[in-house]
Image 1 (cartoon, rainbow, N blue to C red):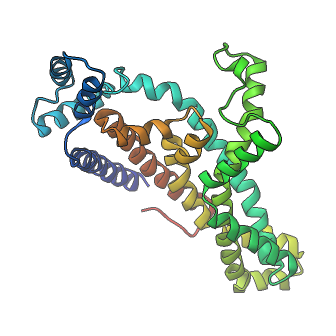
Image 2 (cartoon, helix red, strand yellow; image 1 turned 90 degrees about the vertical axis):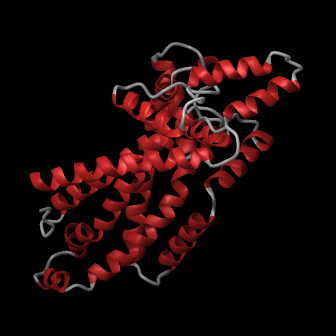
Image 3 (cartoon, one colour; image 1 turned 60 degrees about the vertical axis):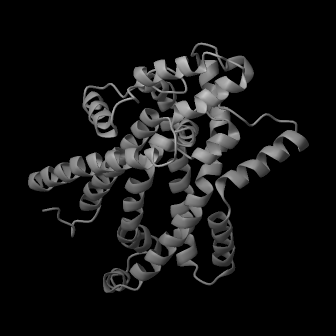
Length: 328
């Protein structure tokens, strides 16, 4: 197990370096840079000192240096906890992301809890009652969830909430708690607003996991060890939940590691944009659009780290859940 962990950590370090370098190259591919857009904005305002300001900013952010030197400086500072400075916000990247990280984690965990709490029982019921009316209804709902983009569902719900019911569904807080210090009332207000974006973000995941759980459980229920358990006189519920589900849930654990941990970094970006949520996702998308190199690069590196950590955690969980798996 120790050798396995050492190998995985070594591969992860190589992957992080490669992903960070490639992401910087891709961000550099479009013609111009953030300051090219900045000078156009200053000129549009009639600012005659636009060129001087841009040259000053270019030296400040190190954009006058070769690409490789800029990357090495940023990567070296990254190891020290200095992620650079955002071009657009003119603030340290760590400060910008840190202010939104807590809400992103809370939303990701809430989305995961809702997804698993609904998907696993629905998948089991659908498999146990194969081809029944219940199975057909769950299958139709699952396919609708798979085909419904989260941002479109957010727009539909927001329209009905605002136009029909005159309710405010954007953001994570009511206006009176937006800038208020933390208190029990603000925490309850957060919970009151959190369930809707978490449910919207979970819809597609629920549809996919239900189908995966149903297919895996159907395969598992036909295995000889299940038939042997039934032959020993065990109850059908015990055979399903204690023996079959334990094996059929393995692929879902892998999905948990590859989806939940990265969502802690970017969350459901499009849903967050539509619902105006203070998560990292909208900032990440905006930084890519505006070529904010250090902000976008930091998000991509953390996204890679979370993906690698998630896969490692999923492998360890699989080895714990299924004794047949050995990591060596």
